[in-house]
Image (cartoon, rainbow, N blue to C red; front, top):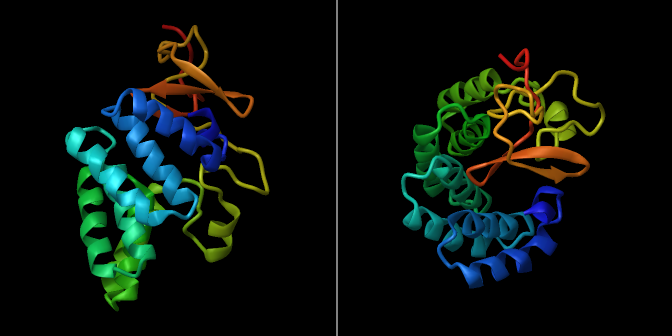
Length: 200
């Protein structure tokens, strides 16, 4: 998990495969392996793994992200209609995820549905706080994890948990990623910056 989060999906693949060999039903490991396959360019191998995760946990809180990744793979394969189906499912499962709306904007633009593309792009812009969808140049300066390449964070990210042990939002489950601690909540990472005033 640490290798994957640090931007080393190539090295994480054998680790996830080992975990799955010990527990073939660990949904997070199966999805993470699919995500690593996607990130390393083995997109053909990503969809069966993500579909397996969906079969094992169809009501998982992360299912919207899983649908979104399948839609993205189809979009990259120029299977635009199939991509739209999966991305719409992703939007239905998690309407607050800006990447899904950005990818839907791309898909609708590719098939000439410019009004729907504009509406999805506007929604992605509303949902994203760093302005990455305001221009191509801004999108290029953003990285996968939401960090800007050219500037440090200018404001704290809000997460479901906080790294401060005295904070009322702390759940105490953390891992260290890239020298910073990250909360591990139900198999999903969230950066532990908190805007809460502390213990109450």
